[in-house]
Every structure is written in structure tokens, then in C-alpha cells.
Image 1 (tube, rainbow, N blue to C red):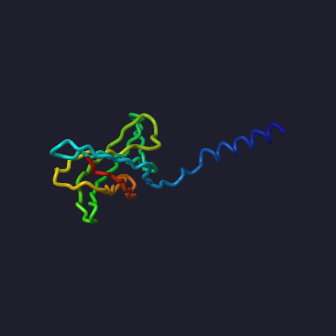
Image 2 (image 1 turned 120 degrees about the vertical axis):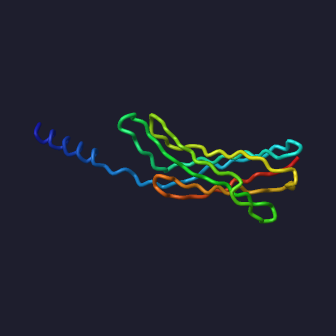
Image 3 (image 1 turned 180 degrees about the vertical axis):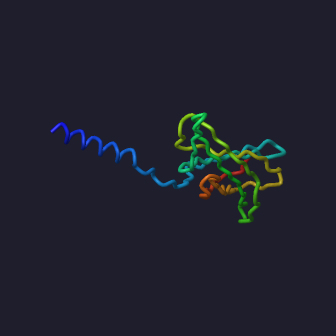
Length: 143
């Protein structure tokens, strides 16, 4: 009976050790954005959280790292799109595996921009896996 128990326990441990990691699926969620009228310019702030990106572990430092590139396009109320109003490469190093990270964008628009509902279109790419996703953040310019 003890041998059977040890055998079952050993088989269980082997299966757990060989368990495949869940496949990565880059996903953007929780978009938030707002704009401040500073008189001569609008200050626009937006954030989107992402999860499902690849993380590599450095055996020497024991740190996890990830690299995420994102750019933001601005869609005006009339449907016209101004491309690449913001872009950034976020490099992450952490002692623990991260579940998600925030991608922040902050930029100014001249006072020539009319009041109305604008869309910020995030184009996000995980540099390690090559996966891509998009997200839209709505921002209202109003005094």
C-alpha cells in the first residue's frame, strides 16, 4: 500500500512539474482618459492596462522582464485621425511575475482643438512575443 501511495505521489509530482503554461493572450482593459483646459493648451491624460504579455526571467538576477511598445492615435469628433500623437516603449523589470501593467499617455493639444468627444486609439505590441492589440479611450474636451 505504501508503494502504491509513493508511486501515485511521484506520478502526480511529475505531471505538475510538466504542466504547460497557459498560452499568452495580450489583452487591453480598463481604459480611462480625461483632459484639462489650461487656457492656451489642453493637457490630455489616458491609461490602459494590459495583461497576457510575455515575461522572461533572468537566471542571474532572478528578475522578470517585459517590453511593451505602444503608440496613440487621436480621432477628432469629425472622424479625422491624427496618427502617432504619443508613443513609448515600456520596459519592465520586477522580482515577481506581473499580472498586468498600466500604459500611460500624457500630451498637450493646442487651444485650436474644438470642444467635443475625441478617441485615443492605443496600438499595443508585446515586443517579446510579437502579439498586438488595440484599445480605445474616450476623452471629452470641454471647458
